[in-house]
Length: 178
Image 1 (cartoon, rainbow, N blue to C red):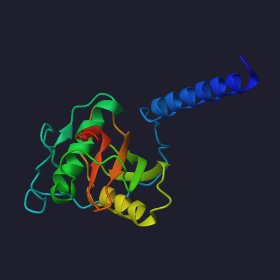
Image 2: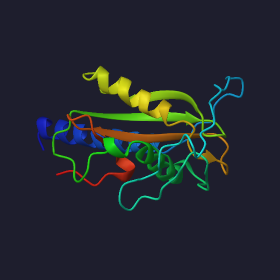
Image 3: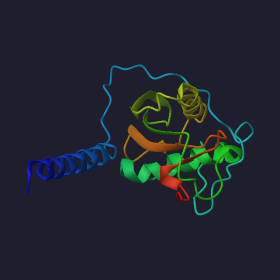
């Protein structure tokens, strides 16, 4: 094996390990310090909440419900279904095309009532600042999320798949990609 092949093999293994580490990091929940203030949010009532209609196969979750999820990974379904329910006209229907306008990975720290405490971009689509702003606006507008009653606070991590039309899918509920 020559030096070029060895460097190629080492580079490939390094990329594989880094990808696995990023995947594992996206599935963790880090507790927040207790001294951070919690922003007050207006309660969503049945009269003010939009109807909860979600993608096929997803369970509808409304803001008035609690999440029974015991892990951050399980909570992803509830949070993604909640976002889909509030944004039914903005969800890309069907399989996503092979080339997307933007892809972002966002961590959302939620308090015990489902209120948004903080947003942390793990992979920000910096070429599309309008998408970053729209995702952040969408996440904040969907608050409160189903309360993570079994975990207290939770960090919800999801990948936002953004089409050039402005419609999106979340990786948790994606219909796939061509």
